[in-house]
Image (cartoon, rainbow, N blue to C red):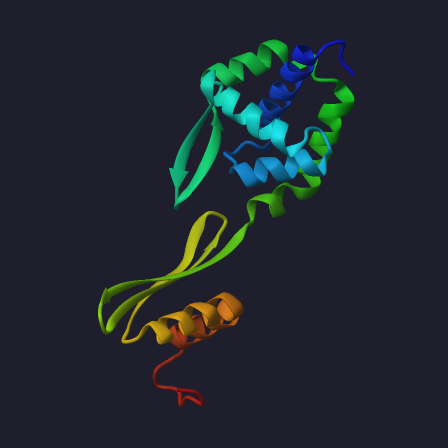
Length: 184
């Protein structure tokens, strides 16, 4: 597409900046990678190198939220994109625009199920169970159990059944306590 690799590199860097501006929110590395790979614009290794170079040149910065790192456009990155956006071919921006229009919501609506435990003492383990959706905690539950076997079992069950368990917890918590119960 371009005569030399430095021009192509600049174009790809502009494309990453364009994606972040178009989606209008900060993205994780995996979200940026998903857009780039599914639109077949840049290979994975080149993208990772470019993200690092964009950080070094202060066109992107990273911030942490909920134990995740998000890339955000800096003012310098936005100004650079505004000055040089014409170097991105129109058919490429149309392809990215279409991808974001069709997939943008699902790209951002990540649901993550997390479970972990920490040994407090010989017979005490703190299990942490979480469901994160749209970058917000739906549930963050800590349980104190007496064995590593219980902690492992709880973590595995949570990973395999978090949706059902979450629904059951909500159901129990919103139930009218004057109603007779069939469970528990």
